[in-house]
Length: 374
Length: 196
Image 1 (tube, chains in turn cyan, green):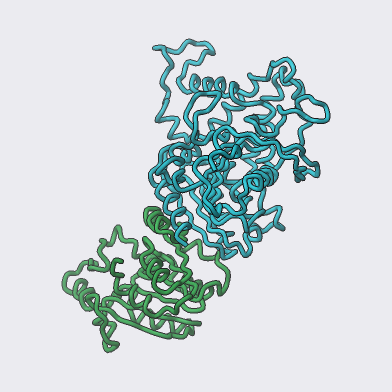
Image 2 (tube, rainbow over the protein chains, first blue to last red):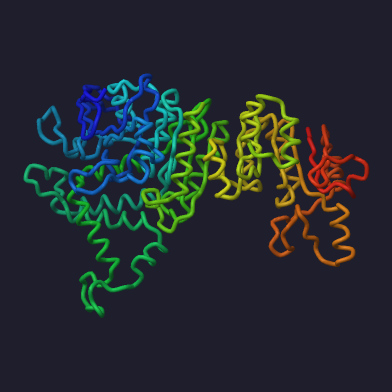
């Protein structure tokens, strides 16, 4: 199996599709950047698909090629971890619309042989999931032992259970929601406007001269980053402390540590992310409303579902607060689905799902193992 | 396999195999696990304490963190064979509404509770003049979650007034089953099986 070049780190595949999209358009070819970890067993029953968040990528448990940093979920994925690469065959694919090897605004439009830019079709979360299903077909995996995701990854995971109920045995949905609220959309719109207001954006056609709208993208990242943290977390980390100085400068330098931190977050983000991808993916999240696509009743999305569900929220997450998870849980209960849910305590807001949390590990570990014994 | 609490054992002994069960206030899922392992029951749980939910989920049980006072309305009518409420009735804001909900969701309902008319409780108030603190009701009046103390006779009156059918009753004293005679005085703990 190891000689099969479909499996391993830093994989890339070009599937002809065509992939029909919710917008009515169709995408062809469908390029996907992905990684796999562990070994697919003989009856292909140990596959775990991890879905990444807005600015995440397929480098879930390996060194990131652009930043040199550890994978974004090494706390959860690896030998002996809850998502155990000794037991599970783990797949993580870059979502379409993104910029780490999957089809997106920066990849080549076969019709023009130039980067798509804003001619790339607008996507939905369901489109991302359908592209992942194409990848599973390519890998020879009919049924997932589990699909797991946090934040936008949770939106994909829950969409998997609605679109392909027979292909998902269990789903773990962390710090997520079944729809984007007005507040969620509002924050995203701030980010998009920051990008589009950057004169270097030029209607998205900035690839030819390699002069991207970095300032706009950095501001978008700064605004979004605030929503990933809690007020208490920011206060604990920075308070009103000054940055490398003893007194205020009466100017507009980054006097405060929190300003310096946000500027750093913004600047380092632009090195690894494409501004147009940010527009497309935030749009897909804003369009997400799982109830809307099921006659306005969320429970209908889970009718007759045999999938086991596990939901986790964090008490300081105000981006996708516990009430959003509870809405999903109520719908699952109404549909008679096997659901587990717990709100965990953490000081760090929405980002908690990416941080060390022994309770989260214990729950995911037990939930996945229970699905293996039956 | 750890031994079940005696009131839970009574419930476990009286549930039909392969039934669908909702355990409200399921704690760490001890009863659910026993029902799953011994009777192939499809058990679901509702529990208010996050640490208990985490323990139950890590045992592979389907348990949702929530509050019996607010989260039962999401469950459809008649979606379970049994709804179970063990040692939780006295902590709810409206026990009468909760029992209505149990019998809406479940075809039958097990309800167990500590008897506030047990002679030791009576003596404690009569002689000591203080709010009773007992083995089954260990908290003091100011920090107890038990806000609606109930006696066996009170409960029977509620069943009668609600025109509910009583299909079974069991009484416990010192973790052993005890008779019906003078249960309101002698039983520490009661388990009822109800149907509408």
